[in-house]
Image (cartoon, rainbow, N blue to C red; front, top):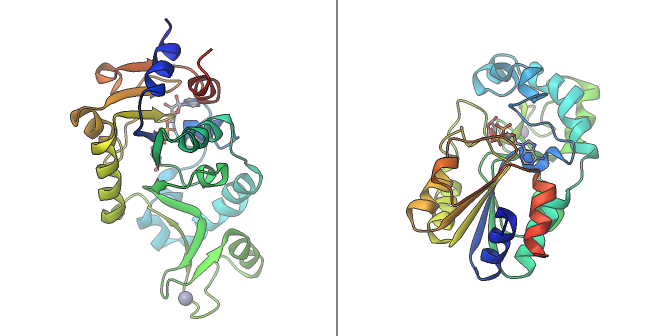
Length: 246
Ligand code: APR
Ligand code: ZN
């Protein structure tokens, strides 16, 4: 029985699955990954647009990246078959929660109701001074007035509600993710290079707590050697097959 079929039959008997996702699950929606060929980081300098240090020094760099790259992508992308398959698994009662490193909001758009966003979300924009929240469209409209966009209430500078490099992850969110990983029977790690910590520790915690670990990722990862299943194929191809083992 091939790996996908073996994993699919395992899944039918498991009630508590947790999915752990990275940029690769959104690649087939047209959201560029960070690493690997054509990755975002081969074109834009993450030490500028993705780090809190540079944002505080020059917020316009991020907001120009947002205007030219981030917003046009977020406006057009839709969930793909992989996101939808995880929602089907939730509806079937097998999948308890999705822990995601992604900031694109596509799991919620696919219908998933339990999503832990480790790195925040680009779909919410907040004021650095008074924490007033803005939608993507409101923030984008403000860019026509000035860059960086300012808060309507207090004139504070707006920022995306994401975890920049150089910032700590929200401890409560991380604890929720650790608890979900420690109590699951099977963790599906989908579309992540599993190189960024503390996020990449989550599949290991599931494994150490006795869960099976399945890695579905086009490229290799440092955790392949401890995984029960390694499937190096596209998420949009594999995940639907896990729903209906032929
Ligand atoms: N299906 C499955 N895997 C895919 C697909 C696909 N269609 N397309 C690409 N991949 C794989 C790549 O081989 C790569 O290993 O997805 C992985 C994406 O890895 P990264 O680009 O490193 O993304 P991720 O693991 O989510 O990065 C973690 O790093 O940049 C920070 O905060 C950012 O959340 C991000 C974190
Ligand atoms: Zn404000």
